[in-house]
Structure formats: C-alpha cells, structure tokens
Image (cartoon, rainbow, N blue to C red; front, side):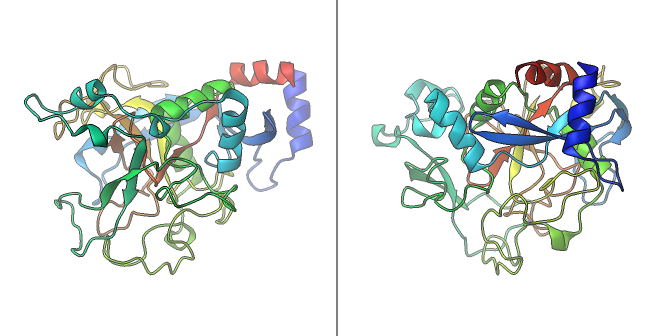
Length: 336
C-alpha cells in the first residue's frame, strides 16, 4: 500500500516550491482533490489584539499528518452525494415542535404551526452598522431555502457548480463526509492547516467590502460566494481557508476549550457544548470566516477565529471541507 500511495503522489504531481502532495479521489461521478498536511507541532490560539477570549490560552499542540480537501465541498460534489443517496438535508425537512422547544429557554411560547415548515436562514441588509455588541438583525427565516435555493426559494445554484455548497447543517456535512469515506476536520486540524499555509492577503479573499450589514460594494468581485478556485491557494495548496464560507468542524463549542486537559496531541475537543450566551443550545464550531465578515464586525477570516452554531442550523454563508487520516486514504485507494 505504501508503494501505491507513493506512485499516486508522483502521478498527481508535486509543487517544486513547497513539495505539495495532491491525490484526486473519486467520489461518485466527480472527484475531490486531497492535499497532504505533514505532521508537526504548532501554537494553537492567539494573542492578537483582535483575538477573543475563546481563542486563549495559547497552547502547544502536536499533530499527526492528515489529508485535507483542497477546497470546500462544491455544489457539484454535493449534488453527486444527493443523487446517489437521495439524502434530504436538514433544511429540506420541516422541523418538529419538539426540536424547536428543546433549544429555547424554559417558558418560551411555542412557535405558530405555520412556522414548522422546511426552510433556512438567509441574510438581509440592515440600516444600522454593526459592532461587537450589536443584536443580530440580519438573518431571516426563508421558506424552502436550502442548498439548491441558498438565498431563498426563488434563487438557484444553476451555473454555481464550482461554488461551495451552503445551507448545509453540521449533520449534512457529516453525512457527506462519511459517505465519501472521509471525516470532518477537528478544530485543531483546521487551525494547524490554516497556520501552516500562512496568512492570506486580504485582497485575495472574499469578505465584506463596505459597512456591514448596510452595504457591500462587491469590489472584490463577489457579493455572495465565489468559485472555489477564484483566489490563490495558501502555501500548502489549500483554497479558501479564509473568507468565502464558514466551514463546519467536528468539535463541540465551549469558550474554555483551550484551557482543558489532554490537548497536547491531536485534540478532538470537549465531550459536550456550552455557550454562556445561549446555554440551552448545543453548538458545533465553524472556522474560516465568510463573505459576510470584515474587521468592523467579526473578522472571522483570521486563522484562529472561532464561531459556534447549533448543528441543525443551515446558513447561506456556511459550508464545509473534509479530511482523511492515513488509514482512511489507504482504504479508499484499495477500492480505486
């Protein structure tokens, strides 16, 4: 098996500058290109002036090597999964009253029955500029909004096959990765790859241009998502590790994760979630920022920035990418 991997690496080609190892993996009727991330150690977290409390304390982490998808999963790749499995995403299934009530504080009135319909959250502009303490007023529930109709039921992904799939919940991302013989990256894997790849020039990422959420000038060429190969890759060959879409990772969210024990090697995060701002809602971590981020509000495109979202939530600025362990890659190559 080692010889087979070496052969494929040679056929796939290597960059003369960074010795980037790439393997195309067949996934249904399409393929996903995987990049080898060599093992090593790094400092996880940040003391940057823009860093938040949940990005600290900085701590040393040792990582085994792993494979990471070159780009976020695209509409074309996700469509192959849907076509072969008939999977229904979270946004395509009407939520139950029990699901809704389990995530709100005790005593909250139940929503009207007409709200228990398939749909998802879409962005709307707001007249007041946002700051770190602003109430979130730029999301609205859109009937029948889902991965095929990411910006409302009249929108479409026609012509957007090479854009990242969005309106996918954590459960949807997990289902795809398992079907493909892959995994969602841990938070440590994601940050390690982002830092190893180097900081991306802000002129080379898709983020909000203008006053958020009042107006986006689109001066970077995109008001929503961009094709996954539109911008330059980082130094290790990964695209869109900053901006475009937030990316689900495997870990539960806790603000004190970095102070927990057993984070010295390949940490997988806490066993449960807690967000003091919404104690009743379990949340998973997302990374990388999106086209809705800028310095004025979230600066989520920083490699250490952490966001948290309930795993059944779908948003027009959230997608995912996949990873593979060495053993997962061996298993895939046996069958290809």
